[in-house]
Image (tube, rainbow, N blue to C red):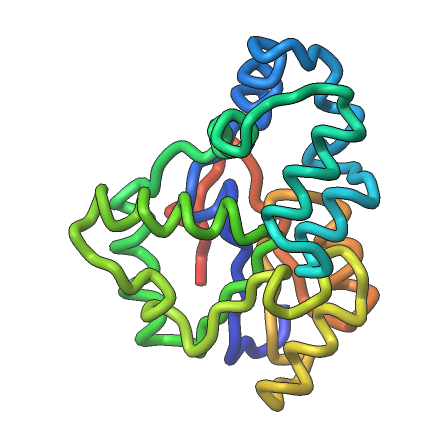
Length: 204
C-alpha cells in the first residue's frame, strides 16, 4: 500500500454494528415475509435507491412502500422495522477512531437515508451522551445528502474532488465487496474489512 494520508470509512459494520436479518424479521412480523426482495446488503430496488439518494422524502417513501407492498402499515410501523437493523456503536472502535484521526485525515461515506440517519444519531447520543458523531471526521458524507451512493465510482470521485484528495493517497475501508470494487474503479486504495475483523485489527 502506498503512502496513505487520507482514510474514508464506511459506517455500518465498521463503527456501528448492523444486522439486516433483524429488519427482515421485523417486517415478517408485520406480514411482509419477502422484505429482502427490496433491499439487502448487496442489492437494492429503485424505491430504496431513491430513498438513499435523497430523491424522495421519508413521507413519500412510506406511501410508496405501502403501495408496493400492498399493506396499510403506519409510518411508525415501517420506520420501526426499517430501523431494527441498527444495533450499537462499540465504544472501543470509537476510541480507536478518536486516536486514528490524529494521524490521518479521516472522512466517512455511508449509504443511508434520513430515517436511519435520525435513528442512529439518537442511538449514538443515548450510548455516549454525545451528539456530535460527525465531529470525528473532517467531513461525514451520507448518500441521501450527497445524492449519490456506493458502489458507483462517481460517488467516490465526487468526495475526492470536493476534498481535493489524491486517490493514490487515500484508502477506503468498507465491509461490502461491491463498495470496495467501486472504490477501486475510482482509483482508491481499499481495505475490505468484514466480520469477525474490526478496525481494531487494522495496522494503520
